[in-house]
Image 1 (tube, one colour):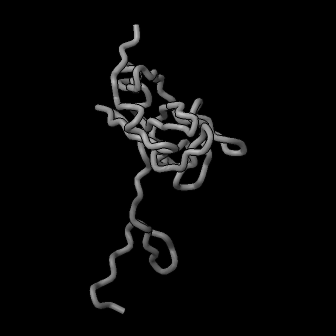
Image 2 (tube, one colour):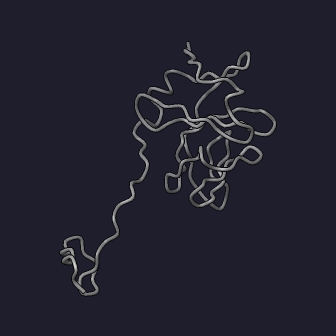
Image 3 (cartoon, one colour):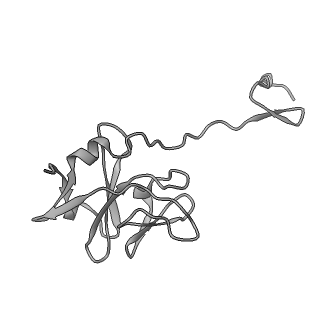
Length: 141
C-alpha cells in the first residue's frame, strides 16, 4: 500500500509555476501547477544538461528548461521532439486542496541523479589547453 506524504497546499504553488520539495537524498522534486489547475511532479532536473526545471516557464502541460529552452512534458517527463530524454516523474494525489507525494518514491526514485557542476575555465599554455599550466605571476604582463 502506498504511503502518501503531504508536501504543500495547491494554493502554495503559483499559477503557471512550481514549488520545490526537498528530499533527504537526491535532488529536489518540482511540483508544478498548470493553467487548468492540474498538478504534476518531476525531478527538478532537465534531462539535457541538468537545468532546474522549477525555474522554467510553465505553458500548457509543459515546462521550458531555463538553461536551453528544452520543452519537457509535465505528465511524462519526456522532452519534446526533436530533443530526446526524460526526467523522472513522481506519483502524486490531491485531496482537499493538499498535494501528496509517494513516500517510497521520494526515498528511492532517482536519488543517484546529480546536477552538473560548473568548473573553472581551462587555462592555455602557449596556445594549448592544459589543467597544469602555472598561474601567471601577480603583476606580470
